[in-house]
Every structure is written in structure tokens, then in C-alpha cells.
Image (cartoon, rainbow, N blue to C red; front, side, top):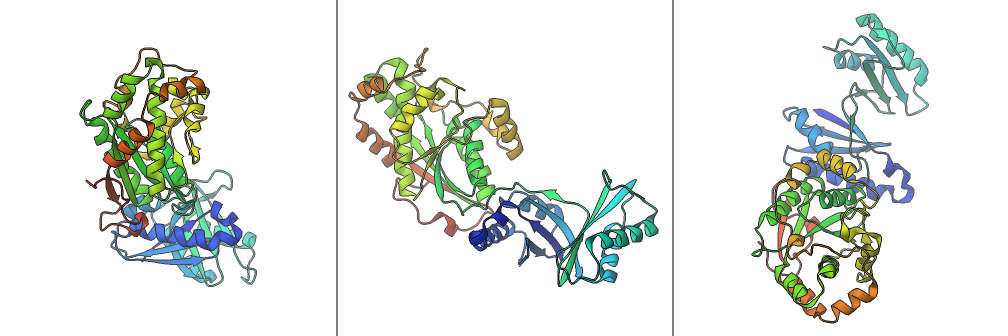
Length: 404
């Protein structure tokens, strides 16, 4: 069997809620690898152990486990009885084929009844490796670190510790609805909420047929990509062109962007409630564009009746782009498209919109009618990872618009 030893960090701080978090982490690990083959999960003190058939390529397993939120780090390990002879045999197998200039042993004894202390075990195993190989010991910057974790019934031996994404398992922090354009920022915002344990419903506004379908296509590609991190997703596609047209006919040009965004928040919130979400998420970063000044962000928050979460609010474009590259969304986001906010855009949008200005402008608009129209005309699409039948994580389809 291929044994994967999974360590977590933040979950260990949850005390009374720890069992719930660990159950969700185990479920997500199984879900992420379900198409590779059967997996057995054991929960041990401070770690989870996954066992796969030897026929499954370890690289495929590592790729999947390395994207599961809640995993601090993981290793492909050898699982042996907690005897000195078995540990030495496992080490000899683990270092076979290696030729480092230096090494160290990092042994941890997780129970006091083992006959050797951690320090004694480090010395004994280090001397064994040196006698076998002649390698130089370096306790500060070794080329090879042999890890040994001794538990009451068994011991794990491994030489490589791979990083996980950290955070909390998706599903432990409730549901949120994320406004997702085809740009760089919003997919990163959604990803960061997944990392905090939220399940994310995506809401995309488009202006087809006034503009091309490129932004819709990008939104679907981004939803498909992000589903690799939460395993089941629903994307709402809201036609916004006619709503924008109504705004243009009835309001001053400098206020259009803020009015568009206020309507988006209202529509997204209506969808969010139908999906049992508890907050709306945006990819806004303070001061990045005209609609993201402190004054204009305040105008958006005024119309919301649930929290608006802005996980990127203090990040600059370079930081956001670096994270987009890391999660794989950057190349999709930079493909040319026509975002709905490019339709009927004024040359000089207002950057310091006041409450009085938007209230006066919205008097001329049928706000409830426009919101109801956006919600009623929304289509939705579901995504699964790995591909398969609709996951129970999604719940029943919302009673909003047709699926596509």
C-alpha cells in the first residue's frame, strides 16, 4: 500500500470542535482522491493516515492531497511496528537510491513508554545511517532529513515533507456567495474564502448580447478550476445588459458604476439567501479602481442586509496576481474579454459618491423590479470534481432560473 501521512495545524487548536473539523477533513481527502481508487483513512493522534493501492501513481495522490484545505503538510511514508529493528529496516529502504552530501534524523517519540527518548533515538538512528552510508551529519542544513514519528502501535518513516495549503477544511465555516467577474481578483477572493472553510457559490454578471460571451466563458472556466478545491460548485450567470440600459437611461453618467455595483450586490444577496449563504464575497481591493474607494465601497455596503466580505481589501495587484498564478487562475483571467462593467462606462466615474447622490439617482429606477428581473433571468450550472453525479454538498438546485 502507498501510505500518505497528513499533518494539520490550525485544526489542532479547535479543542471541542476538533472532531467535527477532522471528520470534514477526512471526507474532503476521500472526495479529492475518489476517482484514483479506494482509500482507507485512519485518524491517529495529531495526524491522518491515507492508504492507497500501490498501482496508483504517488504523484497523482500528492497532487490531489496538496490542494485539500486543512492539510498543513503531508508525506509519502513507510508504516512499520514501533520496534527499533523495524524502524531501521524502514530507514534503510527509505534512503535507498539517495546520495546526499549530508543528512540528519528528526525523530519524535509520541508516547513515553517507548524505551528510548527522542534524543537517544536520533543518535541511534543517525549512527545507523552513517555506518550504512558514510554520509556526513549536518543538524542545521542537511540535504536529506530522515523523519521518524514513533506512535504507540506503529512508526512512520519518511524523507520528504510536502506543503499543503493550510487553512480549514471546506464545509466547516458555512456558505458564501462570491461575485465573480472574469478578472484576476475575484477568483482569488473566492479561493481565500474556501481556505477559511467556506463553501462558495459563484455569481457572474454578463452583458450578452450587448457584449460577447467571452466573460461568461471565462467565468465557467474559473468555476471549473476552483471546483478542484471545493469538489462541488454552482455558478449563477446573471444577464445584466438590459438592467444596465435602464440605469443609463435614468441616471447621471458619473454614478453609473456605483449604481451597477449596488444592483449587483442586491441581486447576489437574493441569490445568496436562496442558497442558504450567510455572506456575499467580492474581490475588491481598496483604491484599486474608481468603484473601490472607501466612499464608493461604503455605498455598496449600505444596500446589503448580510455581511459583505472583502478578503483582498488590503492586498495590491502584484500580491493578488502572485496568488492567482499559484492557484492556476491567472492565465484564464488574463484572456481578453468584455466585462459587463465596460458597457456604458462613463469617461469620468465618480470616486467619492455620497449617500444623497445615489439615493436621488435611484428614485428614478425601479430597484425592486430590476433586482427581481436579474434573479428571475439567472441561469445556473453545476460542477463536480472529480467528475461524477451531483454531490450532496450542493443541496437541491435553487428555485432561481433554469440550469444550463
